[in-house]
Amino acid sequence: MADGPTAFVFAGGGSLGAVQVGMLRALLEGGVHPDFVVGASAGAINAAYFAGAPDLDGVDRLARLWAGLKRADVFPISAMRIFGLLRRPDYLVEPEGLRRLIQKHLEFENFEDARLPLHIMATDQQGLSVRLSSGSVMPAILASAAIPGVFPTVEIGSRHLMDGAIAANTPLRLAVELGAARIVILPTGYACALDGPPKGVIGRTLHAVTLLIAWQLMQELEALPDTIQVHMAPALCPLKISPYDFSAAPQLIERATSTTRQWIADGGLDRRANAHELSAHHHH
Image (cartoon, rainbow, N blue to C red; front, side, top):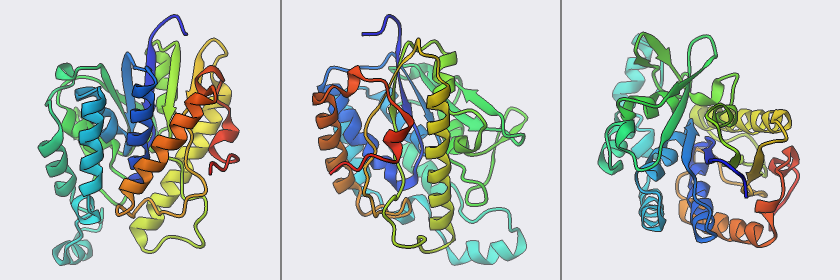
């Protein structure tokens, strides 16, 4: 065991974020509890929810939330919006759907009220990471998940912020700066077995973002100091599900629960994570 705090790091990945629910279930069952959580992009939503209910009951509720999600809840695209694009073509999707979802399900309003310390990472217009750890959680999540061109940027303070996945830093480095001695990464992976590009503009954008996240994580893993224990719950591969497809959440959660249980049983928490685990390992 590490001497010092354990951090869970939630990476992004659109609808593939469902896998983090299964990972959480297996980790908690295995007796692994974080001292604080860090989330970026879609992972900020799961990180925030978990910080408010960091136990198996909370994870079960999160699983039900994911199982009931429809694409239109997160990406409501109306005819009005499409006409609006012709007039003000800055982004495709109004964030109202996502805001409603968070408002309805998140059990606290301010970072300070979470049961676990929560840190959310967004990106400023220079590509630098911005850590959000105090005040209202809602704008922080919306900023961190604001996929460029899909959602509008979010103004916090005087900065216009966007998706945490775009930053030069990853949430991994943020966890290190915050003093983690042990880090457990909950990756969403990416659709490594797609036959062709996903359908539609948003599907393709999301797929590109998930690839970016996976490659950044690999690079950061290599750069982490040896003094830090770092483990990565197994991403699902082969995976044919687009990060824009929300219908498969229950299967993703089940698969991630069983692969993470197996990974723990095989000593995954005793081994240092390496970059190949995101791409090379095909877990069946």
